[in-house]
Image (cartoon, rainbow, N blue to C red; front, side, top):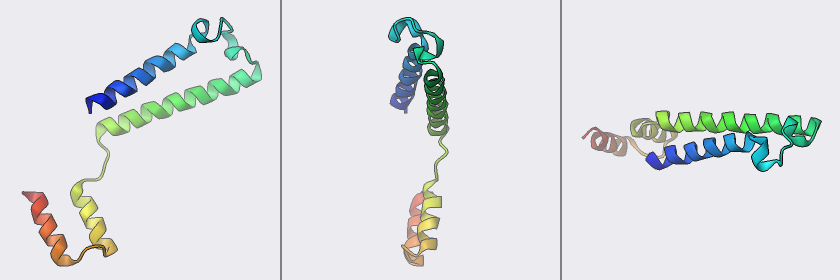
Length: 94
């Protein structure tokens, strides 16, 4: 969990550094120095950054299925029978 936070933090910091035109782009600040294509690159950059932040929040808040939900889905699909379902359900509740 801590390693995920660290990775997302590093990605965020490096993304902000990318925006600083004097560091990477040789001082071409306005739209990355590519005119209208720079505008498109900028939009893609910000969309990717927002998506990474969304993924980080989703992973850190734990919006995942519980083991019991997964077990219920397997039972509903017919992957396991009722006896096995009840046995596994008891094991999960211990």
